[in-house]
Image 1 (cartoon, rainbow, N blue to C red):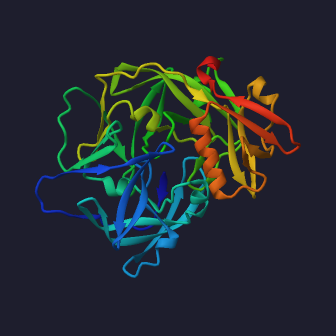
Image 2: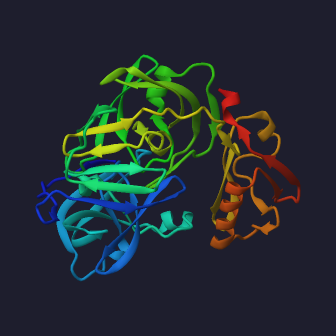
Image 3: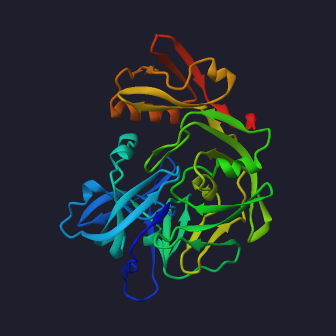
Length: 377
């Protein structure tokens, strides 16, 4: 996330003993987002662990008596290039396991729309300004983040140096894709393997891309619109050009920011070293090629209805329904006027099942099955 501000702020202080330390932080992976539990004023909240953003706080939490307003004009830009001015508060204490983050800065945002889409309540984002000057190793197999104040030996790791955006400390580097060099944000808040903007994609696209219609992703301030593309590409980093990562699933949408996200990072036990300013990737064991299974379309609750929100331009799907069409039932779940519980049940069905029966507004029933997108690249 990009930020502009009119006032320089002091760094957040960390309440520690001054000795070397190491703590284990459990996390859950929900909708390809890393969720951690934090404590503010002795209350527990779910935060997204997001290296691609500054820390944010739900505005409904900012009635805390001890939170301090900061005189700052902050303009934030999300992954879809939507901009918004945000106020900033200083939180005296945020606890993450045994670590007490003192006087941390948080931008304030209304999370209502986010929580309308999420079946797990999200109260904030634990961003790179809080991660700064520490080292964070993410173990996706054990669902544990190890945080320490000591850089790790780089033996056996691929080292990717990064720079940090001023104020937010969001890490960014460069990426080689089909002969082009693009700016890249290292983003644990992005669920996809690689997301790039359409301008960059126009320079590297080939004839094997898959096109889609409708908003392909939801970011902090809303959806992107129009046409999106999916492709499979090989990538490398200028710092290590001899190491090629093949078959990386790539989404191209309206934003101009390139994001390296969870579906890539989860294979390499990443270490975000904010002391030495580098990302370490364990490339000893490469992931096995696997199908890229997808429904090929998205469903979302909008204005009290369940709507087909996006779809790949695949003839067999286009013959069944179109973007914007209402779905009044999914299997035996009535969705004519769906509540949040019903929408969450549908999300679970889409994870658990390989085939679903959808009922359209005119009563027509259509049977849909997951497809392997690799067959279309």
